[in-house]
Image (tube, rainbow, N blue to C red; front, side):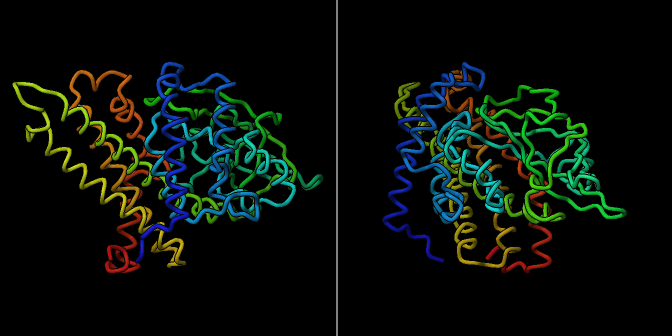
Length: 391
């Protein structure tokens, strides 16, 4: 396995870092004090700057209008996105990877405007009674035999999207006789029957919101179907694997920034006549987090390298789960340690450590909880072999 970066990859990483430091980090406090919202003009400026920096649509293939980054290149960029609080990377124009499967008309209506920063979609999978077990999803799509349209009924929670989100990718169960086949549909927010029932505030202050929707006899044409009938599980799982790798990368980025902030503070802060960094109670936890960060970085980059190398998809799935599990658990512990280093100052919301402590907690939940990752890893140990999973 060769993880050496090419000159082009170094340039991409440095360009992403400059964008995060120069454009996104200066907006952290404004976003926090604004409850996760920025003035529309500011948000537009960020989207425009992201396009000019060559970061928009990086994860999507060139043939559909993206930049065609490899998974490793995506990781290099997401490591930088992790170095900003508030999920401010959400303002960078792009689209869910699953839209690579859109047909020409769907690309024109949904994908291309998203890459221009004019639209953005949310993924609507989770329901009040169904989270980790997608087999229990209750939202249905029934075909109207007379028109060929689909009637969608159900309730979706945690429909994550930024302020300019105006459509969702809905996972529904197509009912055909005794068959129940999970299928994806593109649904505009202004479609009759789509109703937002709640827009809760959460522990973190994020650029993305996570509202709840009810869909009541929502009629969409067959042209709104994304992929084949019954293909939702495969398409969604494909996205989940990549997203778990992205989360691992962002968690490493968060740890790198947290440790840097703590070292800067602890080497300059003097108590009892000594730098607090020289007290083992301060420096040793940071040393432990440095080891965790290095391990998270390598796990994530290994999963990306395997994905790019065409390795067995099941092994890549296990490696992505390993990366997400370890990185998300370690990052939360790192944030807690760093907040402690700052003492009372760490408890202030103007301090990135405080914001990270609230924000990193959800990485152990979304896109598959830590418990689900452990289940995937354990099954892979049995089915793929210990050597392939841990080697």
